[in-house]
Image (cartoon, rainbow over all chains, first blue to last red; front, side):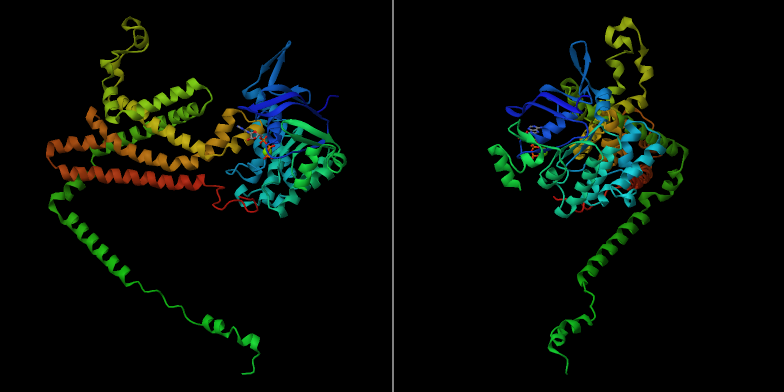
Length: 253
Length: 298
Ligand SMILES: Nc1ncnc2c1ncn2[C@@H]1O[C@H](COP(=O)(O)OP(=O)(O)OP(=O)(O)O)[C@@H](O)[C@H]1O
Ligand SMILES: [Mg+2]
């Protein structure tokens, strides 16, 4: 079986600035990959290319064997828009640094939104699934509250439940704990760890070295738009071979 | 006497805690209140007692059939124009924010024209549309021989007003709606898209409901303005509230009492709109907590 996420020759520039410079990588099914790298090294851009919130200049990405953002006919790729792209995105869960919950809907409705509106699941089934997910992230008591009434850690856990409600094939996390006060980081990482143990394929951009060491199957260190070094955490984090990795880790750890 | 020092030391604050707090006296506030009340009373009295106001005439006409019919037209015109302006305003706002250059340029052009020419001029232009296009339909594009409806039959005062006010108002509404979209963060669109919502779903379920909170107060402002602005149809022989009033006082010369009748009704209509705004805003503010998220930085 092919890897869950595959990228070949992924490039992206903003004006004169080359942010991604011909990246190749695979993420296996059930694998947890942590992306490390200095600020501005293109980690968020890479993640956003996977669900095409960002449109790469060159290269292809596939999720579960399906090219993202294109339809193949013969030996040509035709760019997808609207409904088809939306359908592809619904298979890819994304968790943002700033949660981005819908402030005008209750917690339960936030989690229901995707299933009911996008997947058109019957409300009763979707509701049952949503309640189970909220229970899983430890927020059973908050279903009727609005996002503004929750702590940052609670909001981020709702955001994870909201993404999971789509039954995604892969989950993307962009610095999910960076906006949180230190004492709230643990509860979010615990939920993510639980998810990883459950076999979810995950790509996580994070500065939590401890989490990467403990949960990641593989750590990718990127800088200047390329992958500088990758491998199991004990190798990349504890015995980095490249000087750039070493100096980055010395700064954050 | 024998109390230990540690208890005795803060005895000052304990004693202070037993004291009564005297209310603040603000004599000048009372004086100011008195002056304002007296002046209000004088003003009211002079208005109420003044025979020139013609209160009996006001009473006689306040609920007369002709006035009520005028109110009906005013309300109908205002509501229809506002509905047209809102729908068109949303479309133009979406066009303006679109990536397509032609669409956004077209929207800007619309805004430039309809916001740049006086409302009264537009109104009179629409009323006299027959001078430009005697026939409506294919004839507009392909010449007289292509046929169409007689413009003078289609464009009566009400149609002219509907087009004039509606299109003018749509320009203003589009900017209000665009402001509402700008107030909703980029992250909301991205969250919706990452869930797999299409553009229309994102607009309807995520952007518009949140933008509405910002859109409603200035829109009600426009609505209230429109209520009064519709009185301009008096220039194109309309039949609204002000026109009815003018029609009556042209016969009985009771100008002031009848203008009072009109003013009273405009005040009632605007008050109702304000009341509606209050309930609408209360509904739209669901989930909006004034404090920022606890435990989140920044
Ligand atoms: N929409 C954009 N327009 C212009 N430049 C952009 C845009 N998005 C990102 N960039 C630039 O691309 C570079 C990489 O950004 P990216 O957000 O991917 O970095 P990052 O590795 O996620 O950094 P951080 O750790 O600070 O989040 C940065 O220099 C950023 O300024
Ligand atoms: Mg980033």
